[in-house]
Image 1 (cartoon, rainbow, N blue to C red):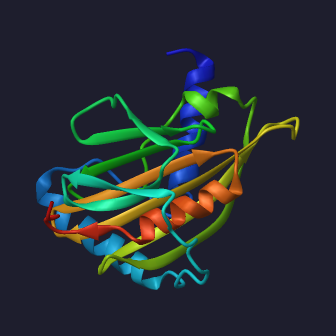
Image 2 (image 1 turned 180 degrees about the horizontal axis):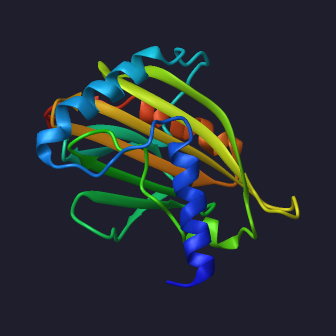
Image 3 (image 1 turned 120 degrees about the horizontal axis):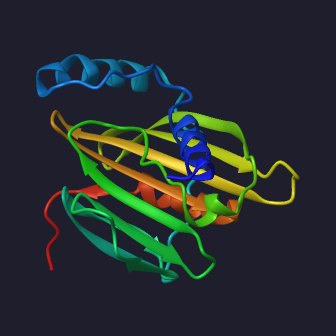
Length: 200
């Protein structure tokens, strides 16, 4: 991996863990304490206090398989190949990038060092909001941030959602975009997550 890739990777990891305590790699025997810590910290967050963007005919339901459920996305998104079986990826017509994944516990994000992030030179990081929300009846956290090119000429807006479905099952999503309006739309998508078998 090149020095630039390492720098971008480090920036993304910093962005997605800024308000979390450092975590130590652990075995499955350590999962309950880590889960308890995440739950306690999530419950301590301020509730998200802003209206969702109305989803209308310009949106489509995407069926989730792991965990079972669905999420509404703007029609401009198309699914692309993901790196592994636990993750799914989409890209929008305006180049917005979206990744969703399943995990045993909330994990704050998946690092990204390509796509939009690769365009930024020595980006700075600004946390804009971290809050708690009910996502389909499940405890969730939302984090909004932005990366700004050192020249101030390019900005990437980011959003990360972590949803605890049940002990041993979590859902995560991360969006990167040049548009604050699109980030608001992703906030709506994540907050309207529906978990459970979907009838056809």
